[in-house]
Length: 113
Image (cartoon, rainbow, N blue to C red):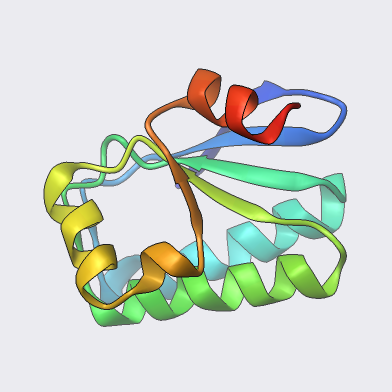
């Protein structure tokens, strides 16, 4: 589900390789994300351009992943959100919690990596 597509000294870019991010995938996603954070011990940038739908259980897994990352001194960044997914995050104000960028290049510029 999470595929590492790029590694840098400060962060890793991992692609979320599902279309509908829902209850069916939330537990596995959370497990893979926590494992990635533990194994690599650096910021994780999630490329979510393939994700067209997100439900509340998957949002919970994202928030849990962010909480875990912050607790370890790392961060979780979201990249390439589809319009509907981005609109949902804005509606429930999670855009104030997550760092969200159009792509890796925009995140790199904004975060001075």
